[in-house]
Length: 71
Image (cartoon, rainbow, N blue to C red; front, side, top):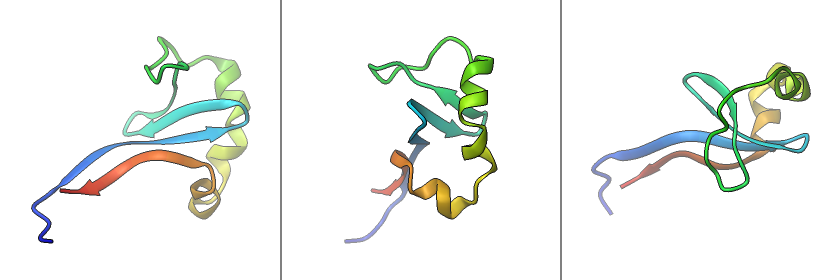
């Protein structure tokens, strides 16, 4: 199979009771239906603070989707 390109989206993580995407604009919480919430609140940022400070290797453990796939 020859790869002709990639389709990329923000990576999605599940951590500390939150499901959120982490893209170019940083972390953003998602609703239960997968849509973006209207805002990022202080509670969300406080709850994922340890995630943000962890290494990339640790963050991979919480990844549930997103990223790049070859087409």
